[in-house]
Amino acid sequence: MAFIEIKDVRFSYNLGTPEAKEVLHKISMSIEKGEFVALLGHNGCGKSTVAHLLNGMLVPTKGEITVGGISTAAEETILEVRSKVGLVQQNPDNQIVAGIVEEDVAFGPENLGVPQPEIRQRVDEALKAVDMYEYREHAPHKLSGGQKQRVAIAGIIAMQPDCIVLDEPTAMLDPRGRKEVMDSIKRLNTERGITVVLITHYMDEAVQAKRVIVMDEGSILREGTAEEIFSEVEFMKRHDLDVPQATELVYRLKAAGIGLKGDMPLNTAECMKIFEKYDKNAV
Ligand SMILES: Nc1ncnc2c1ncn2[C@@H]1O[C@H](COP(=O)(O)OP(=O)(O)OP(=O)(O)O)[C@@H](O)[C@H]1O
Ligand SMILES: [Mg+2]
Image (tube, rainbow, N blue to C red; front, side, top):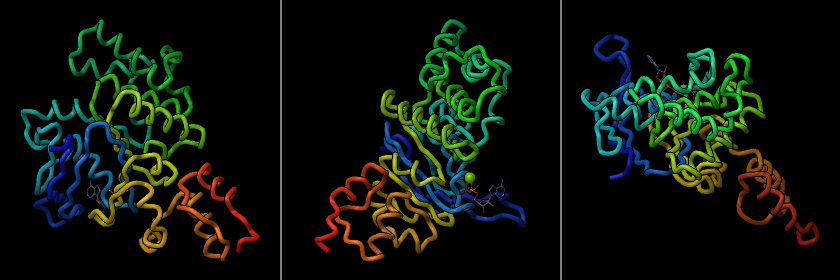
């Protein structure tokens, strides 16, 4: 059994009322410990609903979700589920609760009843993990968006979850903030083995995941490696989904009859390699 199992899950908001609406239609997916998964899809396709289901803030209307073998629907073990799966939201301002960075990061472990000396240690470690240790005595509201979001991530890390789910964590950030946050997320995954589920609208972020899951109107449309998903440019376009910029560029050049060779690139470096191999006399 995988670390997270979503099995035949249906979810409706406002169940039992005339507004009841099923927004997830029998979805299943497995996430292994240590994986880095990106979850993509149009606005309203159900990504945030999945995020809230993963840490038990919502429970399936039908089907089951287990985290480390524990059902998210069991009330007795809900705290255990929440301590295993931490959720980072889009707006860092809504996640910051204290007036000093280190107090903010301490908030989660304090609520878990972690003893004081260990809290100190966890806070320092979490801030170092996101490269914000030197800001520990700063006021969060004076930080940049990327820094605030990294403090929010540190607050989750200090609770020592096995998995973090990030729901569009870079949506409100400028390009520099986005890079800072993505670098931190990648390091948490590669250096600490934390399982990452990243919900994003940015395809250039999605390609950094090991596996990509594409949702469409409450169902799973496609699942595979970034290479597999984004090499099917036409399929993605038919579903009004973007591909990474480098992929798009090479796709358009090929469509215009330029004889580029090799697999579709996912990033600038791969794109450059394709350009270097291009021999205009060979066409
Ligand atoms: N609290 C709620 N009550 C009722 N319906 C909701 C609620 N939250 C979301 N929905 C509906 O559920 C569906 C899925 O919403 P969800 O927020 O999960 O989508 P999303 O993929 O995260 O979208 P976005 O990309 O805009 O964040 C949408 O039709 C939305 O209108
Ligand atoms: Mg959402």
